[in-house]
Image (tube, rainbow, N blue to C red):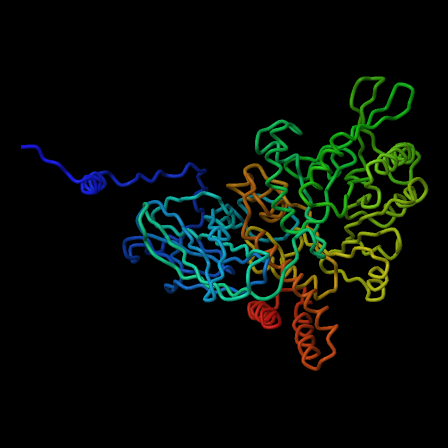
Length: 588
């Protein structure tokens, strides 16, 4: 007897008998073992299976500890249009539970407006070895400092395999479209385990009727120093090859999207000596001919500057340095056919003979490129006598060139109209009348932190909210922006161990290879977004003559007064919470 199955029934039969799709473990690097795992943690007290809850973006969750969280499956956010919000999901289990992934639904409002699901991104937080502040700017032996794991790297894996007895945060970001309709939007985050639905989280974002400008239009003067040389080493590509430019692009785009304004360039070899794992080379080739004349090859300099400009970083070019560490300079000598290193102190005849022909030629080249007006001869933490001699030569040979200085000697008053870009150390203050004068002239005035500052900072052990406070402190001090000496001067193995032979862990970089962001960098950008909001709200309120506007402006100014603190306030958590709430209230 011949049996005939209906087509639909046959399809169901085949589907039911087929094996479920196999979820492959992701190919990724291995994190370092936790050197400070708490052996007293009783993971056996955790019920079997995968656990998940909304956490706090102000907390770095310890990999080896059971998170102190009550189960929470709802998250609410408030944003301007064109703003990026962050949230944090926390996963943990006592036994290996399998492979997890996240899936977002469309964001919809009650009046039918929508934002696509892809405005949301989930990145698995990876752990990196860190240490502690200790003495700050000191040479370090690892055995002299606490070693631990810190949750910081934001990986772009689409799935992640849960280890036994471990916690794994997931960083969530929401990029609100510029054209989003104001209103309250809801969405869901579906957490999947081994390809099947595990748990659902409810998301709500209130979008205000306000627009944050694009990052390239932010007024905040962000100056994070780039190191393209370390990228070639870590990615194992030839310096300035096509492959090098390819890996540089997403990394520097990440910086541009945070509102970076300055391109870091080098005039000569090793402007900071060998203080980083990868010393900076010269972007300009210096060639002394047999007859004593000089020629200069600007190919790398031009390519680098244009590359960064094409990414949207085009306000300023800072050139380091006429005063390098040790006053050592390098050039190729045609007569001997060798590279020559000489020592020439500012103010000496040798120094003038070296820099006079270069400055003359460099200014001519910048003129041809149309870059002279935005280029600065930049110096880093040089003393007043050295600066006096250097600026004297610039005034003599290239008086039209602006000068930038990261000043830790408070000598800026000696050069009132030469330092068109002045950055002061954290504990220094620019006198109110000097700051007023600089603003009237259109000069840039910023501040910086480095290895000597415990707070606020962006070490791999720093509290995440420290980075947000940087934006608030900038506005409180009425400064134009912020400088940090190292965007990406990577250590030997930056994905595994952020510690360095000198300075606290993470001091040399805030982002990771393959354009991986970090909790620190995301929160720093958040603080810059806040600073832009503050600027726009203050201007709006100041131009409104109503009593209500005056009251609100006073509220904002009083809050900013609290943000002038240079040491961590006792009520820091409350201060940041109050600030966020006030911004939201003033935005409605």
